[in-house]
Image 1 (cartoon, helix red, strand yellow):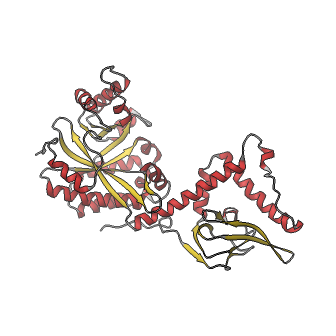
Image 2 (cartoon, one colour):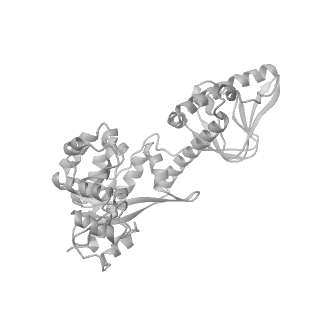
Image 3 (tube, helix red, strand yellow):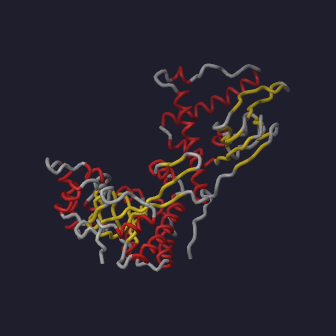
Length: 420
């Protein structure tokens, strides 16, 4: 059975439409949500001696209502739609997560500012005067600009929350696509497999680089359903490749620490492999070195994968927390030489990058592991790695990551032998 994990965090954020003149919340209400204005304008106001006093007018992109969400106290002011508005509802967990990710000093300042504005709102009602124009923290911290820094942090947090919601929409509306980069046997020049790589073309943001949205997905539970989509789509693609190729081909997937922590991950993986009738050896799981240290379940998870027959690849080797002891204990199948070492090679000068690449190849052989070099871009890179005894490689010298039909067409490319 193929399934998608559902969780409270995964459910798409709610949106709310409010017509002009209608209330969003009143002073004294409980703060269940904060709001991001997507369309329209909102007025923040309070009641002073039976008179309505305007505190602020907010435009699209602004977040409001977060103070009551964070401190758990009743709303300190009221919010009304000046025009027809569309709001994104933000949960307490989302706001708190962004605050916890902030720099400690900015986090402290942010919380102080919130307490300050609560007290000033109370003073405003008692005095009937405007809020103090001087930003009081400038006196306490003359070497920084808390108003600017906190404003930037809030803007950044709002954008991350908005992108998080857009990622949920992207998954539901199939905005993601996979591309496939071939992995080449350097000796026979044949294609032995592919690495599945996700791409996102957002209707609002255009092309979003993976290094922008993957860390956000990994910081939430979103990486679990996104990762499942990648695996299911990639294995379905592998079956189409196998129909055109007469020898076994593998598909490699990048696995995040949250996926390792997901109790149903291996069950899902097994279901997918069974559905598409694939040998487990064809499904390669790539993990970063830091994942072995970040995840409490890593040792047991690696042992389970090994027992089931799923090959494990240590990605970007040499750039993380390398430990020969852990490398020996984890019983991995393949090391991947990080592209920074490959692209740093200068064969003529026999520099340090060459020595590192040679050492990794020798280490892999000693441990009975295969080795893949990433980032091969020139024939000089290729020839040097072959001279070191490197087994496999991938990089723009062979092919960029390409859509499925182009990946299948590579088997007809005269540069690559059939592998049969």
